[in-house]
Image 1 (cartoon, rainbow, N blue to C red):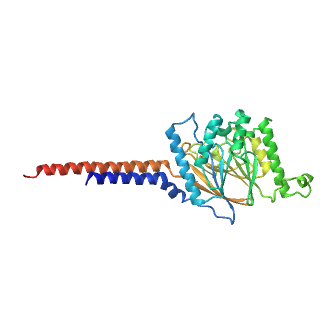
Image 2 (image 1 turned 120 degrees about the horizontal axis):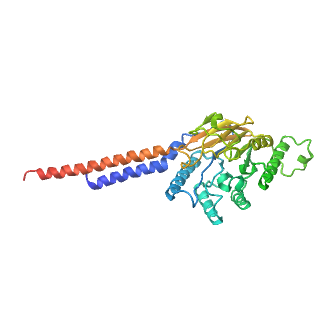
Image 3 (image 1 turned 180 degrees about the vertical axis):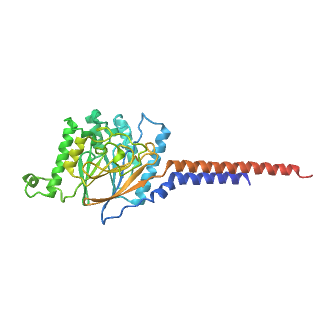
Length: 364
């Protein structure tokens, strides 16, 4: 076998493996995930959480490059394959959003829009997470307003798409301790509650009759936020992928009991979606409403990341969990292909040696 042929074969193997691991594996794996297809003319939404785009202070440059490449490929493969109507990202878009200055935040935004680019007819909504603006005790008007300006309709907002209502809540403003942010958030949530109640029955209320931003119809809303509602741990999950069960602290890993009751009474949601824990959980919260905690979208936070494809029609819903490619599989394929290339190279050296040796031993 000639040396040029061996070089071409090695390049071909490495090229094919690289294309498969870095491009085609995402389409192959994510094509296995399907819409529930339960309703006609439903809102089809892709829901993900905890992308944690690395900033200037944490993580190695290669780690940043690798994780963002993986998320980019997974996201765009999903958009191309499944064509959702809308994308919801449930907080912790950035890993260092509460620390960076204005210039670095603008650079963050450019990277976000580059990685999570969608067609003009497909809107992306991003709820706010603790890594975006800080936990409750760290909230600062400049940082909160900066995120709100960059991601409009991200905090304590009602969004109507087709025949479904979605409420995006800022979990960090639900400590209910009378702080400026908390008082404002509670007022905004009560305003949303009033609009929903008036859409349900406005006949006997002068306040409803005077309302200028009336909703055209009533449907129990879909609650979207970063923190899960109160639960003691993932032991209550009907389904979960947490490697170990740990107790959750109120206002840190989950909302407080008080904030959970406040949201349930004010909004009466049909279903709840959240992130923050980095692990998947399907449970029923204290209102006996189904809640989906979405795993982290980043391989940096979880070995087996996933997201949800969900359909909504009025206040009905159906959900599919979508597992993303396993990094262990990708690494295994690289190792096996490297071993095959090594064998090819070893065979070439051995074959060349044998041929040269045989020529030397031929009689004159």
